Image (cartoon, rainbow, N blue to C red; front, side, top):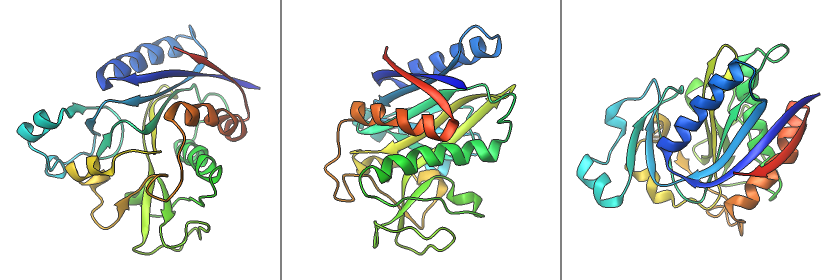
Length: 236
């Protein structure tokens, strides 16, 4: 059975978390550490994926400085996204060898973890298949208790984003799940390059959301279920 250690780090600046990811990835490739998932929340930051378009960053440098929002380029897939307090960020550093070497399956597995988190609060979330622009986890804001995969309309909103990078089948980056995130942060960008659908959070959906730390603890059962793993949790 696969073993995964979840590490709750609290509030971490993006640059520090990225450096830690890279260090752990290098160590995991060399077999010096086991599978690890970093769980944290970020100070306000806009991140640019490999496919990012700068015109999707709506806030200029002056506005970002006034609001205290950093800007970072990353090596993950995807376009532009926003991270901030109230958002659970998960950075799995997992070696997918020998039996999980399938990028699409891995992305779907991350989605399943977030779908499970939403389900803990009675929110039916899901993915939008066969549309590469709509990667992530979505809810129908007109009917939050049901999700019909394959059928979606203008009322869907993104609850969780996914962006990954792999090196020698070891993963980096991961997902961001909106717990109580201030959605005004997403007004600084065109989230993931999507103009037609909104971003939402558990709080915006009417849920009395717990702390991000509690949500991090809740991921343990979902990572165990989705990855068939023995999961342990530690702080720091």
